[in-house]
Image 1: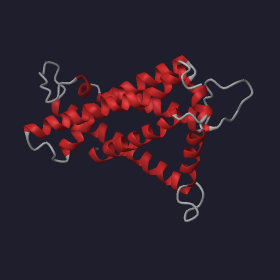
Image 2 (image 1 turned 180 degrees about the vertical axis):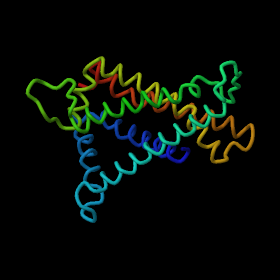
Image 3 (image 1 turned 45 degrees about the vertical axis):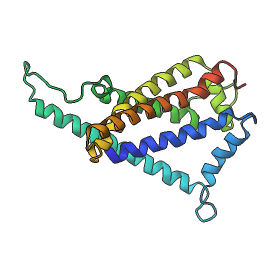
Length: 216
């Protein structure tokens, strides 16, 4: 779970960096070029689009393994409690983020499905003009985040993501043996919170600027 979680955090940081190309004053030229580059990465050594599919498969495998590990851990913890009605449960980790990891994970999975259907498969065409069936990546993002409720749903999902990371990032390094001292634990917690805030702010800047018309 620790390794797959860190893989997903690395992906989110890279994804956030790519989203910042929406802020460039070139009417989406570089953002569209970036999206095209992802599909041609490795060409001609690799067939067109193969690297992107390999990347998607690796990412999907990381998500599945992460979910399986999470449910196994949840089942193991439930079994250790014993199921007696009047047992007193003492939690080693009492933060809100730690207590809602499973529910936050469910919200994230549902959002990822919606996100893929909207921006990759274009099955959900929020904000599209009537009769339009296909848009360039930049225009696709503008169309979606031009709808206030899409931005709101995105914000809720990002809150879930960042709460998940604020606990999961620390736990991952703790599992890998990095919490060797009180100072190390303090550093890991601070770094986890910093990354969580960075991702929330970074991912929300483009949608908010699109919604209020700064990105036209």
